[in-house]
Amino acid sequence: MAIAEDLLALADRLSHPARDEPEQASFRRAISTAYYALFHLLIQEAVQIWSSSSSARVALERRFEHRVMKEVSRAVSNGTWKGWTTPAIPVPGELRSVAGALVDLQDARHQADYDNSALWGYSDVHAVVADTHEAFDNWAKIRTHPAANEYLLSLLIGNKRE
Image 1: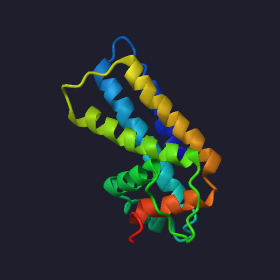
Image 2: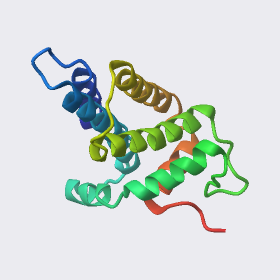
Image 3: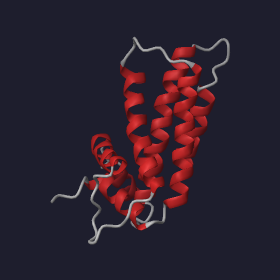
């Protein structure tokens, strides 16, 4: 999980710009970096069991799509997600929290990256980074839960069709 943890540490640093650094640019990069920290954490978790070559793992990592990940995460966080097993596995609250964080972080990243009229304050940025830390902590608690494994599968291939 080195890249995900490194990105989270970088988001922490960017959320505290030095006096001579451009504050809004640092804040925007902190938000974007926080999103990518969680994005890469989940992708790394999903492909870690792939026992083929490292180039095959990289190719699999490239197949994850932000849109699909957001759609699945939205369904998980609002309780409408249907996993892949029957009967359905109960979804732990920590997984709903991780999924909700991914949705919120992606929305914040889009605003930070594309809405130049938005101004970010310290408290806004610190809340985003804190939410990312909480998502990392929640993921660590449930990463081996069967629903977490189904969530990771869904992040790659989308919601289950009825």
